Image (cartoon, rainbow, N blue to C red):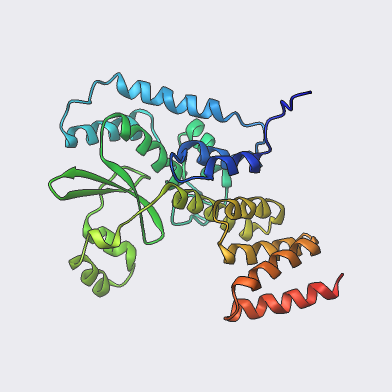
Length: 292
């Protein structure tokens, strides 16, 4: 019997990566998001590139320094020596909250590794991967729709870091991000900072956040073919995300894939029975059935 030696399709491989929360391969899953755009992307090469950065950091011999010293050395290595940072856009272009822009390249891990610039999420993932090697208790947290880094040095303390530049964020800075332009509300929030509003981000949530950033880009560009690829990944990652299912149905409709749009809308309405979105979905379903 002949063996099938063909590599799995990108979506199939992505499904294998994200099927379980146990041992979730965050870096590989993040890198794989670019395979819709670059089907021949060598994910092992991306992982090897990350390991080379880890090896360079390990040569610094900073493991036995204090937490504060390790944090300083890591930031110097990442932002000064390697010169990772945000992608700088011309003023007339719009930048999103994660420090990226309309260019999806800035959200692809392999591109950020090569160019040393990009949006906040891939920068945070690379920083966190290096932090493991110097025994920093650090993880991603969601705050005001953004992914930040939280370091726990011990004794009930925490340091919140902006992954775009490595700067620590005080409670006042965080409050301003939550209520920009509203000094009174920001002051009230600052008094109740920090812990409660900093939600630890699971690997699955981080990948979903990356995909939704890409979804927003392709929606703005009305690039429905690429948008569909992102929505397929979101549904693979979050099979019960009914809102994404509804949105995918609308993308199918834009692409003229009537039967698939009908199938998604039927499944959506089987789970969501009330609300304006359900009413719109029912109307869209009726219109699509008339097009058969």
